Length: 119
Image 1 (spheres, helix red, strand yellow):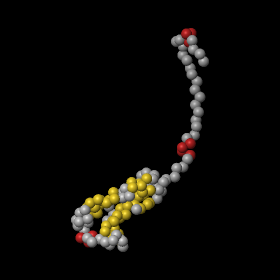
Image 2 (image 1 turned 180 degrees about the vertical axis):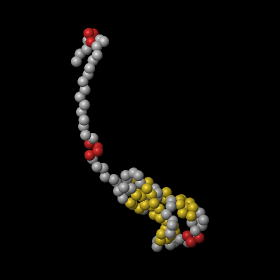
Image 3 (image 1 turned 30 degrees about the horizontal axis):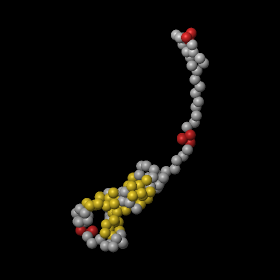
Image 4 (image 1 turned 120 degrees about the horizontal axis):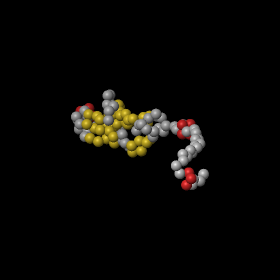
């Protein structure tokens, strides 16, 4: 359509054609990806009695959100023969006299919709 001077002041009606396309993304299922540990967890703080140790979960990839859990363990002086410390399931742990002479470890679990993984 070409407009000219004679069309000035006139109402111009333009027709529209609407295309309705289905949303393809809604028809595609995306599988959740289980957590993968990319950078190992670490522990900071003092191992002297009545001091606080803090676990950093490290870096994990996978489908968000990823939540973290902790289990502190008391091991022998070589780091073997470990046992869970009852109630020690937070990111922090207050050391006790019973920890002297041994090794403390923490197991970090990462959980999302796909799976639970641990270090």
